[in-house]
Length: 290
Ligand SMILES: C[S@@+](CC[C@H](N)C(=O)[O-])C[C@H]1O[C@@H](n2cnc3c(N)ncnc32)[C@H](O)[C@@H]1O
Image (cartoon, rainbow, N blue to C red; front, top):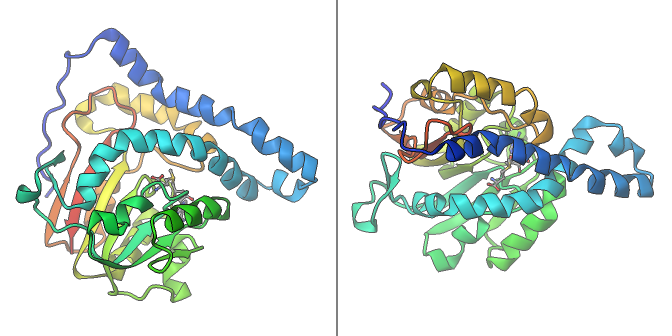
């Protein structure tokens, strides 16, 4: 059964806040579009027409250029949630003190889904005192591997962090990560971009050991409490968004997919209660324990 959600409090926001909130995804889309010339021109100069004329080759390159700037910005806003998440200090969508932490922090064999350019890699470093023995970073976009490698080296994790250059849909058949071998999965802003979420999230679930934990911070489809108007608005934005933001989908019910991936002994997953009703990218946040 889904955990009760804290009410989304209406009427406590100014009209300007509402308009800015609704415009947010369009600003993101426009920012991404502004990276088109700097993606296309070098390809034209190099005569790389194979990449220019192939959407599956061009889109990841465009996204990598865009994310090199948008990623650090989104890290700044997400960090106050992601740091406590990886330390196990989240309850009902709210960071809590270490004494009140409902779960242990990330540790053992860790699988990070879609690390991108390595925005969160420093949080796995020795400085954070997490008992990590090995990390698999499952990242199919080769354009982000150089900055990801640099982030791994800067965090002193070259011996521990292994980049797996595959999409998660190819993970189990590759034999790189065995079923029941992973202690913790970390997914931050990536389950929106993977293909066939039901099948691939279930495959990741099988990689977890019994008692293994999945640390989640993902944006999802608008919640029923936000009203049909927001649902319609998100559906409209989503006509354009995935094409401009690296295949990211706004309308996934990732909480349901995670819950249905297999039996969990504990689901501590909620929307952060501070998120307003006009948020086009509402989140789910927390930890599931197998
Ligand atoms: C929005 S980015 C987020 C990157 C990073 N987690 C962050 O927070 O900065 C989504 C990431 O998911 C990756 N991704 C896309 N398809 C994937 C797949 N099939 N398997 C694993 N990762 C995938 C993308 O390459 C991209 O790096």
